Length: 314
Image (cartoon, rainbow, N blue to C red; front, side, top):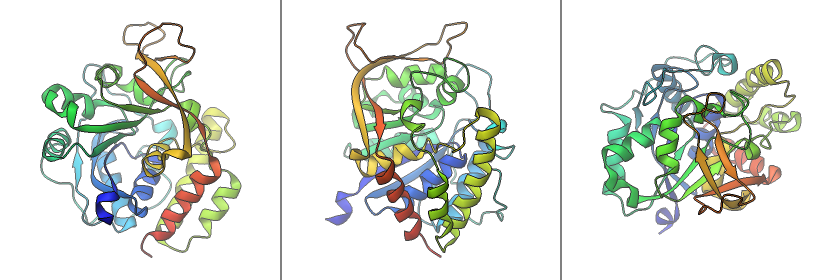
């Protein structure tokens, strides 16, 4: 009975410093069943993000969760990565050994389709990178739409961080994002409005540094590198751990406050490509299609993350 109470998730990611912490939160919290980890090109090329995911699994002692490599290119556009934020490897900072765990044979999109079609409609998709894999799965097998319990994604917002209008994950593959946002599936969006509240403050980093296991040391080193790049690139004193918010919501939805709104993805604008047009005031009169996160319980959020890190193996 206890196992049935767990929320089943497929974590689709592009590790990525914050992606790595999202994996650790999912692995260390007893209320989540991590069905699989799928990777996509985003913060770095998909070969690198896949290796990074495998290294995180090694650190966390995740042995039985399959890792599938996914899409290496956006649906239409040329690939774009983020070495200025995450370093050339996509997860610079910690020095890690080669992972013993290997990726599974087969493609992430096929895995997503198979798991959803075999399910009782009780799997939540948690994409925290570009939405290429999710859109490709929807296009390849439309029957999965009715099987998705919910999509809890990190992306978008009322402002941008890669262009003035666009957040990175949406900008990298806005065509894929449009497919997902227009799918009719229940969607909850952790955009920049929310994730910029998930700051790894000095006090938070001090608490993490006191965790006496590999995961704690690893996250401390991740955040040290992440702090430097966010200060250099954006002038942030404390780095936001965007992707962790999506997993936290799956564990306890009360960690965020959401508003039911309409969001449309811009794919044609010269200066607004990748923008998520968030109708906070209902001015369009169009039917809302997402739950848009607006406020984070910072204390509850970090307590959850730190508890999960403490739960992981020494």
